[in-house]
Image (cartoon, rainbow over all chains, first blue to last red):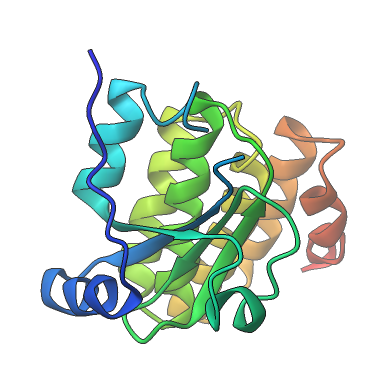
Length: 33
Length: 150
């Protein structure tokens, strides 16, 4: 069974969530090609 | 990562529960320049202020990604002198993923964190002895080598 990861796409949103939720950010630089 | 590692349920669940996942295309400015991105995938752990604490370049299979992210959490906490949180993450690596590539560094860093919380050098010597026994060829065993004299 797959657990779909709900990725943030904006740095500012991710950092705001990290502050609010007391978590660290996993930043994935990806290449679709 | 999209074909093999991220679709695994245990990976998705771990990431959703423990971190804030953020994906940015490798050439997006100013982040590509600011983080000096030269290859993909590049995974970076950031604190809530956007400061980098851990980086991995290249593919990781599911059995390596989770301990690598636990190590990332440990290093974020360690750097912020949140040693209790750091130790919790390192203990989990050593208990649940002792054969992972992240385990020797976790063992090394656990010794350092214990030393910093107690100012007792014994945990450093214990870290070397455990590294020497369990991971004799690891670079972290070499880095801990001076601690054998403590």
